[in-house]
Length: 101
Image (cartoon, rainbow, N blue to C red; front, side, top):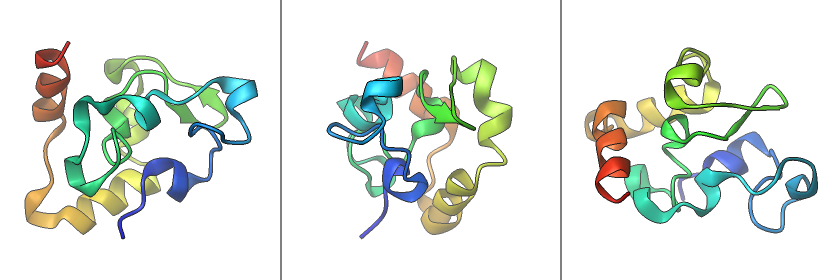
């Protein structure tokens, strides 16, 4: 089974996670607009396009503000490798988010 970002990174921001009280529930764990993308739950395998995810112990901003950090993330690299020919580019994912409001 493919891991979602909160499982891979063990951040504890999934619903009921140990760090929800500190940082809130991560948007990637609950936003269903990207459900199933790259085989993940909600946006769990497309977290780099979601504002408000956690990186380096800090809640991150918008895609434009955080993407350079995401490009070097071990989880991002793992998803790209695992998905190989079926990886969906960020612009496609951002357009899906926009289309579903």
